[in-house]
Each structure stands twice: as C-alpha cells, then as structure tokens.
Length: 189
Image 1: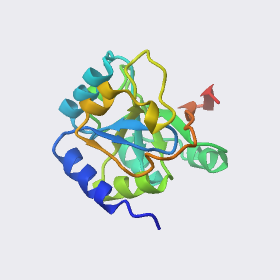
Image 2 (image 1 turned 90 degrees about the vertical axis):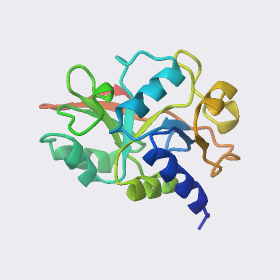
Image 3 (image 1 turned 120 degrees about the vertical axis):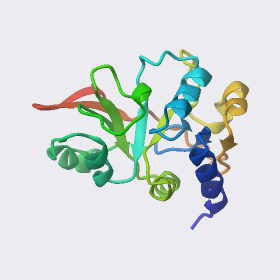
C-alpha cells in the first residue's frame, strides 16, 4: 500500500480550517475545499477567476453520501453508476446541505462517487463532500498531469498533495449525466 497518510493529515487540517487543497482525483488534478463552507467555495471561484454561476463538481465516498446531500434521489441512479465504464458525475436535483454558492440556481448539484484510493480515504476521514474542480484558471486548458498545473494555481492553494505528482498517465474528464425523472440525460460521455 502506498503511504499517503501525511498528505491525508495535512489535507484534513487545511479543509477543516476553510483552506484549499490541490489533489489527485479519479479524473484530473483538482482544487478542493469543504463543499459545505461558503467562504472556502468563494476562494475556489476567486482562484479560478470563475463566475459563481458556473457550478463545480463535488466528490463523495459512497452512495449513502448522495442520499444525505440530495433530496429524494432516484435510487436507480446507483444501478446506472455500477454499470458505468468510467468515472461518472451526476447532476442531481434537490441539493441539500451544501454551501449556497455551490448549488446551481435551479437547486441542482453535480456529484461524483470517487473510487480513487487517496480521494476515498480523504473523503471518508473528512466526512463531508469536497469540491473538485479542475486545477486551472477558468478558460485555460485543463491540466491532465500535475506538471501541467500553473504556478498561479499552485501558489493559490494552502496544501499540495505529494501523492501521484510523478504520475505520467494523463487524467481524463468524467462522463457527465443529468438525472431527472425519466432517468439519465448524457451531457458528456
């Protein structure tokens, strides 16, 4: 087992204090914060130079987390996710318990259940959802490797995870699905 305990401890301290982390996910490197902390979410928008009308993705560790943060989700979404061939982000109606500036104007939220070992451990230990937005300034190319992340982003966070910095496998964006009463509407495959 690869040891990332120090990274987890550092991230937990930063997240609990309303700070930002730069961390590897199951897709690309992400800028993260406590998804329930409005001031922390605002810091992410400022760092990315992004309007807060543009929603950001949130990571959770398990299905039960979706049940906690979404009002009455269609449970068939979990069967759909079990069959998915790649990481899949789902836009759910009825977000509850998130920072107000993270929830879309229509009350929806984009959530991905993350199976990457580091993220999963971090999410389980933090016990709250974590924002995961690509580690780039809005409008610039998404960094698919740690080495591609700009100094502006690196200098704008409170902690940079060491785990997987040397990984040479480029990350890819998740599939994106909007889940409504009729089931999935694929927005990005």
